[in-house]
Structure formats: structure tokens, C-alpha cells
Image (cartoon, rainbow, N blue to C red; front, side, top):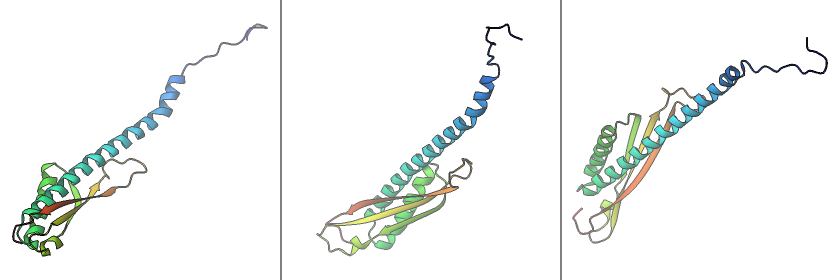
Length: 146
């Protein structure tokens, strides 16, 4: 009992435990989202580099068929060198520039699509995979026989 006119002492024991119990899942979720965003950004940069390498290799080829093969090889080697493991990689090359007459400007376009696996992160609200695409253009030598 408290004497008349005196206020009872308020006790805050256990409040830190309660706050940590409430905040810990939120902090872990935020950390998981930062990791997901980082993985997506790193993969996006690697795919940009792969599409640039593919377009460059395609522009050095002499025929459209050789350009497609060189672009595919360059993109897969680039992704492997940067330790990016996609569940599916698609490389498409627009080789219509090879049909342009010598002396006229022409270009090739390489598009690399990668399906990035995010299932190992298990962050609520994040899909198990994400498709990332990058496209790059490289000019063909204007005066080289095609």
C-alpha cells in the first residue's frame, strides 16, 4: 500500500526486453532487404558488362553466325568470371547491321537476360527469382568487308 498523497513508483523492468522483441524482426527484415538490393545491383552491373562484352565480340566477327556465337561465348564467360550464377541466361544478337553495305555505318546489338535466383535469402515479400536484362550496342567497322 502507498501512503495517502504519495504516488506509486513506476517500474520499467522488462521494457528493454519488450522493445528488443518488437524491433529485432523489423531490423532483420530491413537487413534482408538491403542484402537483396545489393545482390540485385551487383548482378545488374555484371549483366551490363556481359552485354557490353557480347556486343564488342559480335562487332569483331566477320559473319552474323560467328557474331552470335562470339557474343554468346563472351557473355557466358563474363558472367562466369564475375561469379554470377543465373538459373537461365539468354543472349540475343541483332545482326542486321551485317547486311548494310560497306562504307555505310552499321551496328550490332546484344541483349543479355539473366534469371537471378533469390530463393536462398528467404526474405518475406521478395520473389524467389528476378529477371534482369541489359542491352548494348557496338558499331561495325565501316570499311571492313562483311
